[in-house]
Length: 216
Image 1 (cartoon, rainbow, N blue to C red):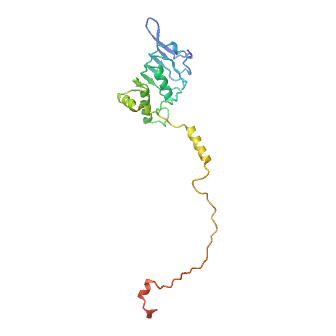
Image 2: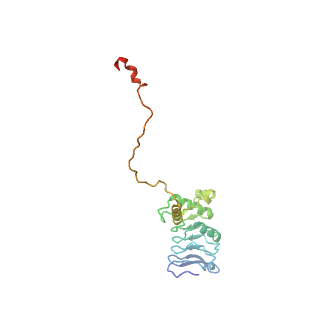
Image 3: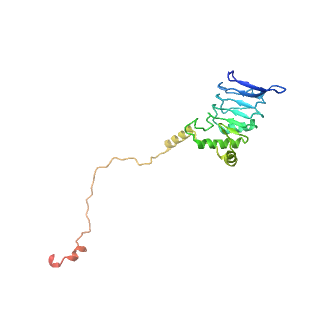
């Protein structure tokens, strides 16, 4: 089992006819790989907080495991992780992902809000239908109903900064025009002199109605 020696590594066993490891704890040991866990198929609890586990995390099939904590690791792809957990851990009831980018909690980034986190909960509960406890809160009956009805559409997706910026830059570079016309230097003042054929003689002026002929 490729797990570095750590003072926080601990195993707990039950008094079965043959020794059976019930729980495994390895925290703050900078683990990147969990190869060897397949030798402990009877595990029920697995604590892997404060390590370097990422999106390539792979667990063997652990049919009895009901508790898994992956707090403060380097997991960013939630959908990929949940698909793997649903297949490898059919009895999972308690899961915590706090401190990972995949968990949009306000403690991870100020860009996240409570609505983001609630949608995340619906999506996780939809994927892992046996969950009773997620992160720091119990799964409520209301959440279970909402996850069953709309959880598949609650995946929190945000554009990658690099993709957005590169796309906008290329679009600006290819644009052959500007939104406003280019300014031109003001021309020197000029005037036009011409003749007009119409000459006003006052014949139709309304003021002439009040002037007598002898006053002209």
